[in-house]
Image (cartoon, helix red, strand yellow):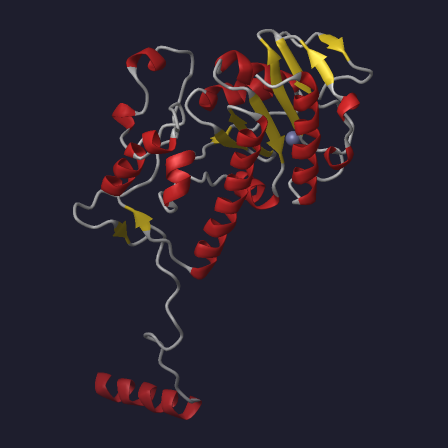
Length: 288
Ligand SMILES: [Zn+2]
């Protein structure tokens, strides 16, 4: 486990990167890390994450009681506490409002399509936690549903949340989500997405060991294997399934998007007024 000065410095650096990349505006976003079995270090409320200093941080226990710090802990502290309660393996939590991923969260479109191999291997599907009023007890409730199975999620009409084995692992997942959202948006603007087949998705899941990536955050290619029986017994544990069509032999399958509008020269006939009148007269004559 990192030392307290190191964690404070890492939070400052992660905040600086989030602000520099436009993942937060003004005082948005919050960052925390485990400092010990019952200690967290966390960003304070009402500071711009791009201009923090190590001594600004708050130290709290896992019930949110402030133990050290001149400022009060983040207004989203309850969400962070819930994540640490649900995920003993998680060492750090990052919350931001990256604009393109948040656009998907506003549109209610989860990033659940099997389109990028590396995202499938690292994050799997990225669900949307239900809308909750920020900084209230509703938000941890909404996050709880997916956090046991996912390392990253969108928050409806709000932003995104990522977790990891250290601060930078959690932060890089935020970068991955925003990058994935950007690519998905471009593909959808271009009018099609080729999806990775379910068979290939399962192969990618098998590669996780090679990269040292541990479940949770399963790919969930098959809902029946989404979570083990022990997990299913837990309160509201849920998994967003990846959309990956089954297609034996084919590794890429044409998209499931509705067909693009027909091109102008496809099925459209252009007539002058004179030609149209002649056609109508012909039709009337043939009726007589
Ligand atoms: Zn927020």
